[in-house]
Length: 488
Image (cartoon, rainbow, N blue to C red; front, side):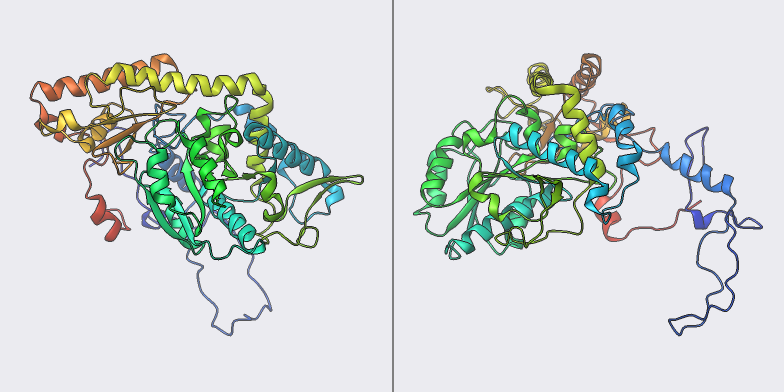
Protein backbone atom coordinates (compact mmCIF):
# COMPACT_ATOMS: atom_id res chain seq x y z
CA UNK A 1 0.00 0.00 0.00
CA UNK A 2 1.18 3.54 -0.73
CA UNK A 3 1.26 6.24 1.94
CA UNK A 4 1.46 9.95 1.03
CA UNK A 5 4.59 10.45 -1.05
CA UNK A 6 6.13 7.12 -0.12
CA UNK A 7 4.89 5.30 -3.19
CA UNK A 8 5.73 2.31 -5.32
CA UNK A 9 6.64 2.90 -8.94
CA UNK A 10 6.06 0.05 -11.38
CA UNK A 11 8.06 -0.53 -14.54
CA UNK A 12 7.05 1.36 -17.67
CA UNK A 13 5.64 -1.81 -19.18
CA UNK A 14 3.44 -2.37 -16.14
CA UNK A 15 1.61 0.95 -16.45
CA UNK A 16 -1.84 0.80 -17.98
CA UNK A 17 -1.46 1.37 -21.70
CA UNK A 18 -2.78 4.62 -23.16
CA UNK A 19 -4.88 4.82 -26.30
CA UNK A 20 -1.86 6.02 -28.23
CA UNK A 21 1.88 6.36 -28.03
CA UNK A 22 3.64 9.57 -27.02
CA UNK A 23 5.81 9.36 -30.13
CA UNK A 24 4.49 9.04 -33.67
CA UNK A 25 6.43 7.28 -36.39
CA UNK A 26 5.58 7.48 -40.06
CA UNK A 27 5.02 4.03 -41.54
CA UNK A 28 7.86 2.85 -43.75
CA UNK A 29 6.85 2.32 -47.38
CA UNK A 30 8.59 0.03 -49.82
CA UNK A 31 11.31 -0.82 -47.34
CA UNK A 32 11.79 -4.61 -47.27
CA UNK A 33 13.60 -6.01 -44.25
CA UNK A 34 17.22 -6.89 -44.95
CA UNK A 35 17.17 -9.54 -42.19
CA UNK A 36 14.81 -11.80 -44.09
CA UNK A 37 12.57 -11.96 -41.02
CA UNK A 38 8.87 -11.07 -41.03
CA UNK A 39 8.07 -7.50 -40.05
CA UNK A 40 7.34 -6.90 -36.38
CA UNK A 41 4.00 -5.46 -35.44
CA UNK A 42 5.50 -3.64 -32.47
CA UNK A 43 8.99 -2.63 -31.41
CA UNK A 44 8.21 -3.45 -27.80
CA UNK A 45 8.03 0.08 -26.40
CA UNK A 46 5.44 0.75 -23.71
CA UNK A 47 2.39 2.47 -25.14
CA UNK A 48 2.25 5.57 -22.95
CA UNK A 49 1.64 9.27 -23.35
CA UNK A 50 4.39 11.79 -22.69
CA UNK A 51 3.00 12.97 -19.29
CA UNK A 52 2.92 9.38 -18.04
CA UNK A 53 6.54 8.83 -19.03
CA UNK A 54 7.74 12.11 -17.52
CA UNK A 55 5.99 11.39 -14.21
CA UNK A 56 7.47 7.88 -14.16
CA UNK A 57 11.05 9.07 -14.45
CA UNK A 58 10.61 12.02 -12.10
CA UNK A 59 9.17 9.66 -9.48
CA UNK A 60 12.13 7.34 -9.92
CA UNK A 61 14.50 10.28 -9.56
CA UNK A 62 13.05 11.10 -6.13
CA UNK A 63 14.18 7.68 -4.93
CA UNK A 64 17.81 8.39 -5.72
CA UNK A 65 20.18 9.28 -2.90
CA UNK A 66 23.03 11.40 -4.18
CA UNK A 67 25.79 13.69 -2.98
CA UNK A 68 23.39 16.58 -3.72
CA UNK A 69 20.79 14.97 -1.46
CA UNK A 70 22.69 14.34 1.75
CA UNK A 71 25.84 13.13 3.47
CA UNK A 72 27.54 10.36 1.48
CA UNK A 73 30.68 9.27 3.39
CA UNK A 74 31.76 6.31 1.24
CA UNK A 75 35.29 5.32 2.18
CA UNK A 76 37.74 4.98 -0.72
CA UNK A 77 35.20 6.33 -3.20
CA UNK A 78 35.39 10.10 -2.55
CA UNK A 79 31.79 11.14 -3.11
CA UNK A 80 32.43 14.88 -3.29
CA UNK A 81 30.46 17.86 -4.57
CA UNK A 82 30.48 18.41 -8.34
CA UNK A 83 30.72 22.21 -8.86
CA UNK A 84 28.09 23.58 -11.23
CA UNK A 85 30.75 25.70 -12.92
CA UNK A 86 32.18 22.46 -14.31
CA UNK A 87 28.83 21.65 -15.89
CA UNK A 88 28.51 25.10 -17.41
CA UNK A 89 31.91 24.89 -19.10
CA UNK A 90 31.32 21.33 -20.32
CA UNK A 91 28.20 22.54 -22.10
CA UNK A 92 29.95 25.20 -24.17
CA UNK A 93 29.16 24.63 -27.80
CA UNK A 94 32.75 24.01 -28.83
CA UNK A 95 33.09 21.27 -26.22
CA UNK A 96 29.63 19.71 -26.06
CA UNK A 97 28.88 19.42 -29.78
CA UNK A 98 32.03 17.96 -31.30
CA UNK A 99 32.67 14.51 -32.69
CA UNK A 100 35.76 12.33 -32.17
CA UNK A 101 36.10 11.75 -35.92
CA UNK A 102 36.23 15.44 -36.85
CA UNK A 103 39.41 16.57 -38.62
CA UNK A 104 42.01 17.69 -36.08
CA UNK A 105 42.14 21.20 -37.49
CA UNK A 106 38.47 21.69 -36.52
CA UNK A 107 38.94 20.69 -32.85
CA UNK A 108 42.18 22.43 -31.94
CA UNK A 109 40.58 23.99 -28.86
CA UNK A 110 39.51 20.59 -27.54
CA UNK A 111 42.94 19.12 -28.20
CA UNK A 112 44.57 22.05 -26.44
CA UNK A 113 42.35 21.42 -23.42
CA UNK A 114 43.43 17.76 -23.37
CA UNK A 115 47.07 18.80 -23.71
CA UNK A 116 46.71 21.21 -20.80
CA UNK A 117 45.05 18.53 -18.67
CA UNK A 118 47.93 16.16 -19.42
CA UNK A 119 50.36 18.84 -18.22
CA UNK A 120 48.37 19.52 -15.03
CA UNK A 121 48.27 15.82 -14.17
CA UNK A 122 51.97 15.48 -14.95
CA UNK A 123 52.80 18.44 -12.71
CA UNK A 124 50.65 17.26 -9.80
CA UNK A 125 52.03 13.70 -9.84
CA UNK A 126 55.60 14.37 -11.00
CA UNK A 127 54.99 11.75 -13.71
CA UNK A 128 55.28 13.56 -17.03
CA UNK A 129 54.00 10.91 -19.41
CA UNK A 130 50.20 11.13 -19.43
CA UNK A 131 47.53 9.29 -21.41
CA UNK A 132 43.90 10.33 -20.95
CA UNK A 133 42.32 7.40 -22.78
CA UNK A 134 41.28 4.97 -19.96
CA UNK A 135 37.56 5.03 -19.23
CA UNK A 136 37.69 4.33 -15.48
CA UNK A 137 40.01 3.61 -12.60
CA UNK A 138 40.11 -0.12 -13.25
CA UNK A 139 40.64 0.60 -16.95
CA UNK A 140 43.54 2.82 -15.90
CA UNK A 141 44.98 -0.06 -13.88
CA UNK A 142 44.78 -2.23 -16.97
CA UNK A 143 46.51 0.45 -19.06
CA UNK A 144 49.21 0.88 -16.43
CA UNK A 145 50.05 -2.80 -16.16
CA UNK A 146 49.95 -3.21 -19.93
CA UNK A 147 52.44 -0.34 -20.16
CA UNK A 148 54.70 -2.12 -17.65
CA UNK A 149 54.33 -5.40 -19.51
CA UNK A 150 55.20 -3.74 -22.83
CA UNK A 151 58.33 -2.19 -21.29
CA UNK A 152 59.49 -5.56 -19.97
CA UNK A 153 58.77 -7.24 -23.31
CA UNK A 154 60.81 -4.74 -25.34
CA UNK A 155 63.62 -4.78 -22.78
CA UNK A 156 64.01 -8.54 -22.82
CA UNK A 157 62.39 -9.08 -19.41
CA UNK A 158 59.34 -11.14 -20.40
CA UNK A 159 60.25 -13.74 -17.79
CA UNK A 160 59.01 -11.38 -15.05
CA UNK A 161 55.59 -12.81 -14.19
CA UNK A 162 54.98 -11.74 -10.58
CA UNK A 163 53.08 -8.72 -9.28
CA UNK A 164 53.36 -7.88 -5.58
CA UNK A 165 50.18 -6.62 -3.92
CA UNK A 166 49.15 -5.96 -0.29
CA UNK A 167 46.40 -8.08 1.24
CA UNK A 168 44.38 -4.90 1.89
CA UNK A 169 44.36 -3.80 -1.77
CA UNK A 170 41.32 -2.87 -3.81
CA UNK A 171 39.97 -6.00 -5.48
CA UNK A 172 40.63 -4.61 -8.93
CA UNK A 173 44.40 -4.75 -8.30
CA UNK A 174 44.79 -8.55 -8.26
CA UNK A 175 42.09 -8.88 -10.92
CA UNK A 176 43.97 -6.54 -13.25
CA UNK A 177 47.23 -8.36 -12.66
CA UNK A 178 45.56 -11.66 -13.57
CA UNK A 179 44.00 -10.15 -16.71
CA UNK A 180 47.49 -9.08 -17.83
CA UNK A 181 48.83 -12.59 -17.40
CA UNK A 182 50.64 -12.05 -14.12
CA UNK A 183 50.69 -14.13 -10.96
CA UNK A 184 50.04 -12.46 -7.63
CA UNK A 185 52.29 -12.54 -4.59
CA UNK A 186 50.74 -11.06 -1.45
CA UNK A 187 52.44 -8.60 0.88
CA UNK A 188 51.08 -9.08 4.40
CA UNK A 189 49.90 -5.91 6.19
CA UNK A 190 47.69 -7.38 8.90
CA UNK A 191 49.97 -6.41 11.79
CA UNK A 192 50.36 -2.72 11.00
CA UNK A 193 47.87 -1.89 8.25
CA UNK A 194 50.81 -0.82 6.07
CA UNK A 195 53.51 -2.31 3.86
CA UNK A 196 56.69 -2.55 5.91
CA UNK A 197 60.19 -2.97 4.49
CA UNK A 198 60.45 -6.29 6.30
CA UNK A 199 57.24 -7.71 4.81
CA UNK A 200 58.07 -6.25 1.41
CA UNK A 201 61.46 -7.97 1.37
CA UNK A 202 59.79 -11.27 2.26
CA UNK A 203 57.46 -10.95 -0.74
CA UNK A 204 60.14 -9.64 -3.12
CA UNK A 205 62.65 -12.45 -2.62
CA UNK A 206 65.51 -12.08 -5.10
CA UNK A 207 63.17 -10.05 -7.34
CA UNK A 208 64.31 -11.69 -10.58
CA UNK A 209 60.77 -12.76 -11.50
CA UNK A 210 58.99 -9.62 -10.20
CA UNK A 211 57.50 -7.28 -12.82
CA UNK A 212 56.21 -4.72 -10.34
CA UNK A 213 54.06 -3.99 -7.33
CA UNK A 214 50.62 -2.42 -6.96
CA UNK A 215 50.12 -0.34 -3.83
CA UNK A 216 47.54 2.31 -2.96
CA UNK A 217 49.00 5.25 -1.07
CA UNK A 218 47.39 6.43 1.14
CA UNK A 219 46.22 2.86 1.57
CA UNK A 220 42.81 1.30 2.05
CA UNK A 221 43.12 1.45 5.84
CA UNK A 222 43.29 5.24 5.54
CA UNK A 223 47.00 5.35 6.40
CA UNK A 224 49.99 6.85 4.62
CA UNK A 225 52.56 4.22 3.63
CA UNK A 226 55.51 5.67 5.57
CA UNK A 227 58.04 3.04 4.38
CA UNK A 228 57.01 3.00 0.75
CA UNK A 229 59.98 5.01 -0.58
CA UNK A 230 62.42 2.41 0.74
CA UNK A 231 60.29 -0.40 -0.69
CA UNK A 232 60.24 1.37 -4.08
CA UNK A 233 64.03 1.67 -4.00
CA UNK A 234 64.41 -2.07 -3.38
CA UNK A 235 61.91 -2.82 -6.14
CA UNK A 236 63.74 -0.64 -8.66
CA UNK A 237 67.05 -2.26 -7.77
CA UNK A 238 65.44 -5.62 -8.55
CA UNK A 239 64.22 -4.35 -11.94
CA UNK A 240 60.52 -3.92 -11.16
CA UNK A 241 58.12 -0.98 -11.54
CA UNK A 242 55.96 0.63 -8.86
CA UNK A 243 52.29 0.96 -9.85
CA UNK A 244 50.36 3.24 -7.48
CA UNK A 245 46.59 2.92 -7.38
CA UNK A 246 45.49 6.57 -7.47
CA UNK A 247 42.14 6.02 -5.77
CA UNK A 248 43.21 8.06 -2.75
CA UNK A 249 45.07 10.89 -4.47
CA UNK A 250 42.49 13.26 -2.96
CA UNK A 251 44.58 13.12 0.24
CA UNK A 252 47.82 14.11 -1.52
CA UNK A 253 46.92 16.44 -4.37
CA UNK A 254 48.96 19.62 -4.17
CA UNK A 255 50.79 18.34 -1.05
CA UNK A 256 52.95 15.44 -2.25
CA UNK A 257 53.94 14.12 -5.67
CA UNK A 258 53.81 10.33 -6.01
CA UNK A 259 56.94 10.38 -8.18
CA UNK A 260 58.85 11.64 -5.14
CA UNK A 261 58.21 8.40 -3.23
CA UNK A 262 59.15 6.18 -6.15
CA UNK A 263 56.00 5.73 -8.22
CA UNK A 264 56.51 4.79 -11.88
CA UNK A 265 52.89 4.44 -12.98
CA UNK A 266 49.66 5.76 -11.51
CA UNK A 267 46.06 6.01 -12.57
CA UNK A 268 43.92 8.90 -11.41
CA UNK A 269 40.15 8.70 -10.96
CA UNK A 270 39.00 12.11 -12.15
CA UNK A 271 35.76 11.76 -10.18
CA UNK A 272 37.54 11.13 -6.89
CA UNK A 273 40.13 13.87 -6.91
CA UNK A 274 38.92 16.34 -9.51
CA UNK A 275 35.15 16.36 -8.91
CA UNK A 276 33.78 14.90 -12.14
CA UNK A 277 30.46 13.04 -11.68
CA UNK A 278 30.69 9.65 -10.00
CA UNK A 279 28.29 6.75 -10.26
CA UNK A 280 25.43 5.69 -12.46
CA UNK A 281 27.69 3.53 -14.58
CA UNK A 282 29.74 6.39 -15.97
CA UNK A 283 31.03 8.26 -17.71
CA UNK A 284 34.22 7.32 -15.93
CA UNK A 285 37.71 8.57 -16.61
CA UNK A 286 40.97 7.10 -15.31
CA UNK A 287 44.01 8.72 -16.99
CA UNK A 288 47.42 7.22 -16.31
CA UNK A 289 50.63 9.07 -15.54
CA UNK A 290 54.05 7.45 -15.98
CA UNK A 291 57.70 8.22 -15.36
CA UNK A 292 59.98 9.19 -18.24
CA UNK A 293 61.29 5.62 -18.39
CA UNK A 294 57.84 4.38 -19.43
CA UNK A 295 56.58 7.22 -21.67
CA UNK A 296 57.42 5.37 -24.88
CA UNK A 297 55.18 2.42 -23.94
CA UNK A 298 51.98 4.35 -23.13
CA UNK A 299 48.86 3.53 -25.14
CA UNK A 300 47.94 5.75 -28.06
CA UNK A 301 46.69 8.34 -28.57
CA UNK A 302 48.28 11.01 -26.40
CA UNK A 303 47.94 14.65 -27.42
CA UNK A 304 51.19 16.25 -28.63
CA UNK A 305 51.99 19.81 -29.65
CA UNK A 306 53.69 20.43 -32.99
CA UNK A 307 54.63 23.50 -35.01
CA UNK A 308 51.33 23.08 -36.87
CA UNK A 309 49.20 22.79 -33.73
CA UNK A 310 47.89 19.92 -31.60
CA UNK A 311 47.50 16.35 -32.82
CA UNK A 312 46.67 12.89 -31.60
CA UNK A 313 49.49 10.37 -31.78
CA UNK A 314 49.11 7.17 -33.75
CA UNK A 315 50.95 3.89 -33.49
CA UNK A 316 53.05 5.00 -36.44
CA UNK A 317 54.25 7.99 -34.41
CA UNK A 318 55.21 5.78 -31.45
CA UNK A 319 55.59 2.11 -32.47
CA UNK A 320 56.93 1.18 -29.02
CA UNK A 321 53.41 1.76 -27.61
CA UNK A 322 51.42 -1.29 -26.58
CA UNK A 323 48.72 0.01 -28.94
CA UNK A 324 45.26 1.45 -28.68
CA UNK A 325 43.35 0.74 -25.49
CA UNK A 326 39.86 1.72 -26.65
CA UNK A 327 37.98 3.52 -29.37
CA UNK A 328 38.66 7.22 -29.73
CA UNK A 329 40.27 9.43 -27.08
CA UNK A 330 38.50 8.90 -23.76
CA UNK A 331 35.70 10.73 -21.93
CA UNK A 332 36.14 14.27 -23.19
CA UNK A 333 33.35 15.79 -21.11
CA UNK A 334 35.14 14.60 -17.98
CA UNK A 335 38.36 16.21 -19.18
CA UNK A 336 36.57 19.56 -19.42
CA UNK A 337 35.13 19.24 -15.93
CA UNK A 338 38.42 18.15 -14.35
CA UNK A 339 40.48 20.92 -15.94
CA UNK A 340 37.84 23.47 -14.95
CA UNK A 341 38.14 22.26 -11.35
CA UNK A 342 41.93 22.47 -11.43
CA UNK A 343 42.03 25.94 -12.96
CA UNK A 344 39.36 27.33 -10.63
CA UNK A 345 41.31 26.09 -7.60
CA UNK A 346 44.88 26.68 -8.70
CA UNK A 347 47.82 24.98 -7.03
CA UNK A 348 47.13 26.50 -3.61
CA UNK A 349 43.45 25.60 -3.77
CA UNK A 350 44.20 21.98 -4.66
CA UNK A 351 46.61 21.82 -1.74
CA UNK A 352 43.81 23.00 0.54
CA UNK A 353 41.56 20.28 -0.89
CA UNK A 354 43.92 17.66 0.50
CA UNK A 355 44.39 19.50 3.78
CA UNK A 356 40.66 19.89 4.39
CA UNK A 357 39.89 16.29 3.42
CA UNK A 358 42.48 14.99 5.89
CA UNK A 359 41.29 17.41 8.58
CA UNK A 360 37.67 16.25 8.20
CA UNK A 361 38.60 12.57 8.51
CA UNK A 362 40.77 13.10 11.56
CA UNK A 363 38.01 15.17 13.18
CA UNK A 364 35.60 12.24 12.79
CA UNK A 365 38.20 9.78 14.06
CA UNK A 366 38.89 11.87 17.16
CA UNK A 367 35.17 12.16 17.96
CA UNK A 368 34.22 8.51 17.39
CA UNK A 369 37.19 6.40 18.45
CA UNK A 370 35.94 6.46 22.04
CA UNK A 371 32.59 4.87 21.15
CA UNK A 372 33.81 2.64 18.31
CA UNK A 373 36.92 0.53 17.99
CA UNK A 374 39.58 2.18 15.83
CA UNK A 375 42.18 -0.46 14.88
CA UNK A 376 44.72 2.20 13.95
CA UNK A 377 43.41 4.97 16.16
CA UNK A 378 46.84 5.63 17.65
CA UNK A 379 47.91 7.19 14.33
CA UNK A 380 46.82 10.14 12.26
CA UNK A 381 44.69 8.98 9.35
CA UNK A 382 44.58 10.50 5.91
CA UNK A 383 41.34 11.47 4.10
CA UNK A 384 39.37 8.52 5.48
CA UNK A 385 39.21 6.86 8.88
CA UNK A 386 38.62 3.23 9.77
CA UNK A 387 36.36 2.01 12.57
CA UNK A 388 34.90 -1.42 13.36
CA UNK A 389 31.93 -2.93 15.21
CA UNK A 390 34.14 -4.72 17.76
CA UNK A 391 32.63 -2.91 20.77
CA UNK A 392 29.01 -3.02 19.56
CA UNK A 393 29.24 -6.66 18.51
CA UNK A 394 29.50 -7.65 22.16
CA UNK A 395 25.91 -6.32 22.51
CA UNK A 396 24.70 -8.05 19.32
CA UNK A 397 24.93 -4.99 17.02
CA UNK A 398 26.96 -5.40 13.83
CA UNK A 399 28.38 -3.15 11.15
CA UNK A 400 25.35 -3.95 8.99
CA UNK A 401 23.00 -2.83 11.78
CA UNK A 402 24.90 0.43 12.11
CA UNK A 403 24.71 1.01 8.35
CA UNK A 404 20.96 0.36 8.26
CA UNK A 405 20.42 2.71 11.20
CA UNK A 406 22.29 5.47 9.36
CA UNK A 407 19.82 5.01 6.49
CA UNK A 408 16.96 5.46 8.93
CA UNK A 409 18.56 8.76 9.93
CA UNK A 410 18.87 10.01 6.35
CA UNK A 411 22.60 9.34 5.94
CA UNK A 412 24.09 7.13 3.29
CA UNK A 413 26.20 4.45 5.00
CA UNK A 414 29.95 4.46 4.81
CA UNK A 415 31.76 1.64 3.01
CA UNK A 416 31.22 -1.49 5.10
CA UNK A 417 33.18 -4.73 5.51
CA UNK A 418 36.11 -3.32 3.52
CA UNK A 419 39.07 -3.56 3.70
CA UNK A 420 38.72 -7.30 4.20
CA UNK A 421 41.75 -7.50 6.49
CA UNK A 422 39.79 -5.68 9.22
CA UNK A 423 36.77 -7.52 10.64
CA UNK A 424 33.53 -5.54 10.69
CA UNK A 425 35.17 -2.59 8.95
CA UNK A 426 33.52 0.81 8.53
CA UNK A 427 35.56 3.00 6.18
CA UNK A 428 34.47 6.64 6.44
CA UNK A 429 35.46 9.43 4.06
CA UNK A 430 33.82 12.82 4.70
CA UNK A 431 35.75 14.63 1.89
CA UNK A 432 36.61 18.32 1.94
CA UNK A 433 33.31 19.53 0.52
CA UNK A 434 31.09 18.67 3.50
CA UNK A 435 30.37 21.38 6.05
CA UNK A 436 31.25 20.99 9.71
CA UNK A 437 27.51 21.03 10.39
CA UNK A 438 26.98 17.95 8.21
CA UNK A 439 29.94 16.16 9.75
CA UNK A 440 28.79 17.00 13.28
CA UNK A 441 25.34 15.59 12.50
CA UNK A 442 26.93 12.35 11.30
CA UNK A 443 29.01 12.19 14.49
CA UNK A 444 25.88 12.82 16.58
CA UNK A 445 24.00 9.97 14.88
CA UNK A 446 26.94 7.57 15.27
CA UNK A 447 27.30 8.48 18.96
CA UNK A 448 23.56 7.93 19.42
CA UNK A 449 23.83 4.47 17.82
CA UNK A 450 26.67 3.61 20.19
CA UNK A 451 24.66 4.82 23.19
CA UNK A 452 21.53 2.90 22.16
CA UNK A 453 23.68 -0.21 21.81
CA UNK A 454 25.22 0.18 25.25
CA UNK A 455 21.73 0.85 26.67
CA UNK A 456 20.57 -2.57 25.50
CA UNK A 457 18.47 -1.45 22.53
CA UNK A 458 19.93 -3.97 20.08
CA UNK A 459 16.51 -5.38 19.16
CA UNK A 460 15.29 -1.93 18.14
CA UNK A 461 18.43 -1.32 16.07
CA UNK A 462 17.90 -4.65 14.30
CA UNK A 463 14.60 -3.33 12.92
CA UNK A 464 16.13 -0.36 11.04
CA UNK A 465 15.42 1.10 8.61
CA UNK A 466 11.74 1.53 9.41
CA UNK A 467 10.67 4.42 7.16
CA UNK A 468 12.16 3.45 3.81
CA UNK A 469 10.14 1.88 0.98
CA UNK A 470 12.29 -1.23 1.41
CA UNK A 471 13.69 -2.39 4.72
CA UNK A 472 16.05 -5.32 5.20
CA UNK A 473 16.51 -7.22 1.98
CA UNK A 474 18.11 -10.59 1.38
CA UNK A 475 20.76 -9.02 -0.84
CA UNK A 476 22.42 -12.30 -1.81
CA UNK A 477 19.11 -13.81 -2.87
CA UNK A 478 18.14 -10.61 -4.69
CA UNK A 479 21.32 -10.82 -6.74
CA UNK A 480 20.81 -14.48 -7.56
CA UNK A 481 17.03 -14.44 -8.03
CA UNK A 482 16.07 -10.88 -9.03
CA UNK A 483 12.37 -10.03 -9.24
CA UNK A 484 12.06 -8.01 -12.42
CA UNK A 485 8.43 -6.99 -12.08
CA UNK A 486 6.93 -4.94 -9.30
CA UNK A 487 4.15 -6.45 -7.20
CA UNK A 488 1.34 -3.90 -6.89
